[in-house]
Image 1 (cartoon, rainbow over the protein chains, first blue to last red):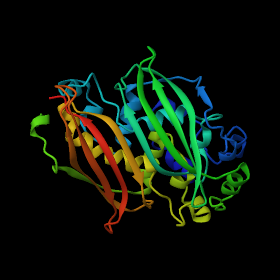
Image 2: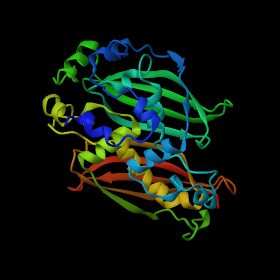
Image 3: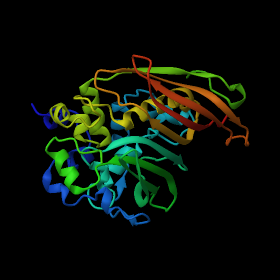
Image 4: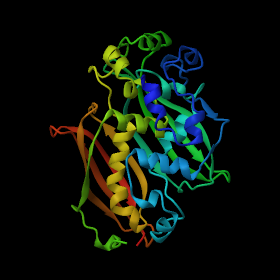
Length: 192
Length: 146
């Protein structure tokens, strides 16, 4: 059984079933953005929206794994002072991967990418029923010890225009499309 | 429901209850599906044997899973008392290969008495592997409303 079949056992939500899950599919690579193409200051509003469903929140918390009832039991969460079931603080990961499947921000999916650290500012809780929009800015890129870093700023808003969070995501990436294609073949291609 | 955490009850130096988590390939696949980060560096043992992105022939835990478990230290401690994160940041120091067991901990480092409902504390966070090596460090600001 290959790893895609193994992962399919864990699908529980509609978004998971609809997601383009094969990050090694060569046909997708043409729609990706590569480190050497990133234009600092480029900003875009991602046209796809993310409608938050209870199943999305519960699926994320279950995989952390975190069985705290604030993530599953609406009544309990309200007794604790929250508006309803709580979104796990790193739920933003699911939002970004769902919304950034091609074009600006698709470096998220690059085979060979490494995660050196992240910064999140929270302004308003994510709630079931929210319809979220992502504004993405290519914030910075730099070379350090022969590795190619990039930082993006994601601002997430609800359907009323209220800012929910600002998320500075940093990745170490293969530099060029040719490097990513080497990774697709299973060759290491991260260092300059 | 357990005793509520209050801002007045918290002191600098308070240790938060630690979280320990063993990591299997099944755990990684589960997190990959939930986060939608299905990068082969986490999900494909065969691909990792060839590409060795981190210089090792094994899959590694998602950095976002390490961050999620650091955040669990906070949510376990404060969220049942109505607490919420104000900011969260973490630096990943060392990859966590499949079949590792890590411990995630935190300690209160700052108290910020702003006003009732907005008071917050800062917590230093860290994660260590089964050899005691640090794999991540972080800092969170947590609003304690009571």
